[in-house]
Image (cartoon, rainbow, N blue to C red; front, side):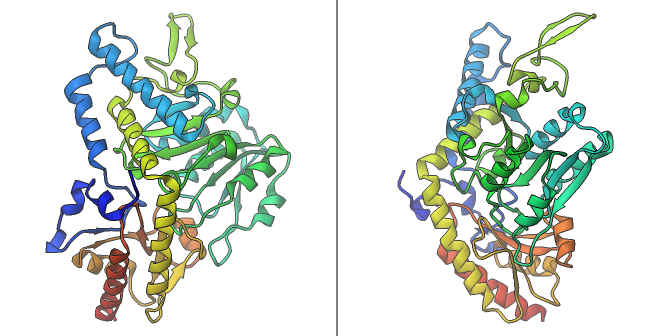
Amino acid sequence: MSFSPDTIRSCFPILNEKPHGKPLIYLDNGATTQKPRSVLETSRRYYEELNANIHRGTHYLAQAATAAHERARETVARRLNAARPEEIVFTSGTTDGINLIANILTSKLSAGDEIIISSLEHHSNIVPWQMLCERTGAELKVIPVFEDGTLDYDAYLEFLGPKTKVLALTHVSNAFGTPVPVQQYIAAAREFDTLVLIDAAQSVAHQPVDVQELDPDFLVFSGHKLYAPTGIGVLYAKTRSMEDLPPWRGGGEMIKEVTFEKTTYNDLPFRYEAGTPNIEGAIALAAAMDFVHALGLPDIAAHEQVLIKEAADQIASIPGIRLYGPDNRQGSLSFNIPGIHHYDLGTLLDQMGVAVRTGHHCCQPLMGRFSITGTVRASFACYNTREEVKVLAESVEKAATMLS
């Protein structure tokens, strides 16, 4: 498929909607992306042609559904360049994947150990580590953020040491669009045998992600931010990093043999997929990853960078406006107008047909660092256009005038 925003838009039925009688300009992709027809048809086809529980049935539908589910795992592994499909664990999303790792590391940490996160993190990459610290007596260290929304790498190096057991870091900030050079952070962490988890929720839809090149122990993301359904996600778990870690949830599928005296646990990835999985979601996620790779992730990245730069340039000309994050933002553009509440601004934009996100974006500590309660965030996808950017800027200026 050649990269053409107009052609791409025709793949997304929902973009024909007209909220408040206005053509929909959907700029809330950081919260969730819309779904292409190929993904919608994949979901429907599963329920119409394959629906059955997997892995344990001998009948035709069970075998067909199992094969489709495991092909999906192979597709995800291939798209991430994982060493083997067994390194792909299906979860319900980014939050689920982080909680899984934070829980199974409980036995590996003790009082005096340290966990490093950053000031850019989403609550889902803060709270599970706080809970792990409460369980183990470990200490949480937070990499500070500069005024331009980038992280203080020197402060990170000062934190890093023999006591550092875990580094949990976002790949791209969901609030400010800050790209983090995670490969540099991971390389430094390797000197101390630190386990590294990367939150790739805001990167996998916008750029190629190669887990062997980045070399994290764990990487997580959600399908619904990657043109797939809600309720499905991925935990990439490097085989050697998981070999001596315990299971998390107990139940069917994660076992080899159960007696009342002893249970033998299954191998990767099934040890971490207790119960009936989101079969349709996994298959649709694979279809979504095929969709973006057919478009070309480098082409998507280049297109979105043009949109973000033009949006930043046009919005910056509005008197008094404040932009957050560095000039090389990815995915999202956050801004405020002093004296105007972000919620009021977002509500007026909605009336003009422009869908943006307002609030703290599940990043309250980051908002506190900048002495704000939230921002207006416009976040971009492959189907957004330069004309939509122009309408966004004009609408922000009009709304600002109305609210002044």
